[in-house]
Image (cartoon, rainbow, N blue to C red; front, top):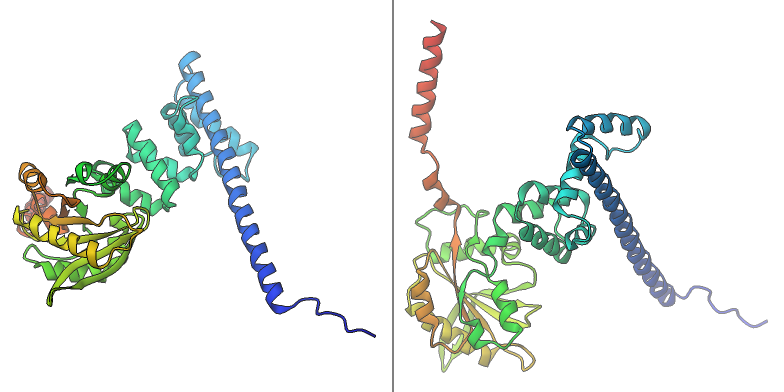
Length: 347
């Protein structure tokens, strides 16, 4: 009697199982997106109806309280019809009138992401931008809130660069939007007297937070990256590779205001990386001079006749914000004054 072939060869079964897992996960994601889109469409319709009743038939604000009670009584197992959520539905419909692209985009992110954007972002264009970035980057709600509170929309593409002259389109536009100004280093705990190596070390120690602030696509290559040119050694503060731009990015850290001579040093680094590290398929290397502050006109003059793509941007340490906060002595004086007032009142 001939031998029966093995029913489940290990290697075949593993590949079969892996393929099925991938299909199931893809189907789960599609199903979740479909459910989310339907839910947000329903919320928009409810909000639009509330708006219409209030505007055309003169229904007052109390309609939301009454609706919340009646819908909760009818659908006790559903938690989405609270008074606060109905207010969000109304605000959602008001923010995205029917037919607007924002309504379609909003269906691609979770409802409470939409609520956070409605709460914290008032500019319609900024709202659309944050929705698009959430879709592209898969931001969690906490990350979304952090990006909004750090003013990412306002900081994107604000660095002084020469990309329009030194890079081909659309690489120049992509690179310009990639660079922020300022970079927010609130996750560090450095004093005002920190030196460049202190800043570099702190950023490398918190590389996950630093990569999040840099943005999607940055891959960390190394710090104090060694280059040898004609027997001499040179050290790049931070070297990255950007997966979307397909190029190396050199960052030179400064704890002072920008000075024109920094451009010459960065020009050297970018040229050396292009010759020594860049693959023929890579795009031109970019340089970012990251300073504590800059004068825009000085930075523009320094880059005007430079042929390598360089950006000048700034960083913001948490200690720089302390000037706007009361000192410990001020707080003590205010507390003592308040206590004295209380004692006087009790007498």
